View 1 (tube, rainbow, N blue to C red):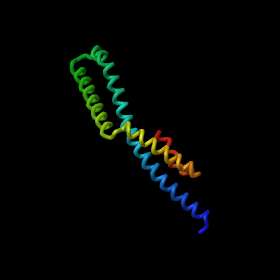
View 2: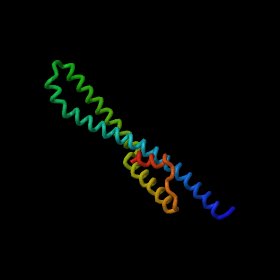
View 3: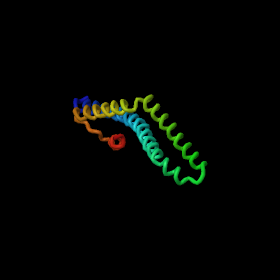
View 4: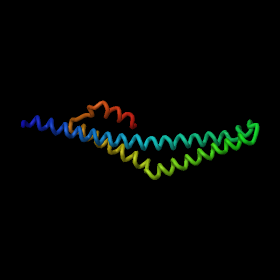
Length: 130
């Protein structure tokens, strides 16, 4: 084997391994971002419902409407608590930071070797993860 063919073989192997690692990290980032987004959405919903309590009570024509509204707020608060517990259990903040750092490290290593992410899937995963 010539030196150039070994070099190309090694480059291809490194790129293949890097793409597998990047795909794994992108999957992790996607999952952690989903939990973080759910938590943020539930927090915003809870705040909106809290602000709406007085206006809803003012326009409600009977007690059953107010009771339903209170049940809705409790359900959102329960969902909020579950999302927070899940975020803690999955270590979302730490996991996002670690995965972004790992991903950046792989990209830098590839660039140092003169290899760029050539796969369209890897590039789109990178953009979607951020």
